[in-house]
Length: 101
Image 1 (cartoon, rainbow, N blue to C red):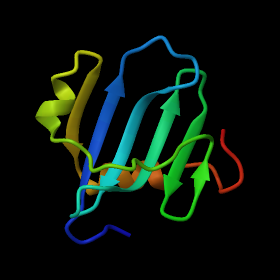
Image 2 (tube, rainbow, N blue to C red; image 1 turned 90 degrees about the vertical axis):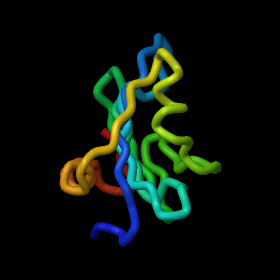
Image 3 (cartoon, one colour; image 1 turned 180 degrees about the vertical axis):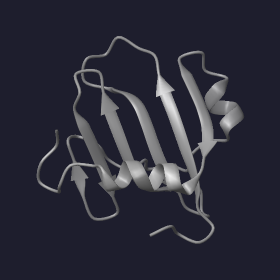
């Protein structure tokens, strides 16, 4: 279910916050906003969100995603574009709605 004009972002976040994700993969629409996202937490939990669901504490961003250069300028983040197939594999493996792992 790849969206026309979309691109895909993979980011890792190095931090010590127990309740924040350490890895994220998102589908970004042509307008720059997240359309779908899967987040992975240090304790093994997986959360996800789309325009109709928020599972496991994950929600879509409320502002457009900044350029990769801006994300990567923050030392705690490493971000890159990934292929649609990589995102779709993560999306297909997410836990069912109503239940985070």
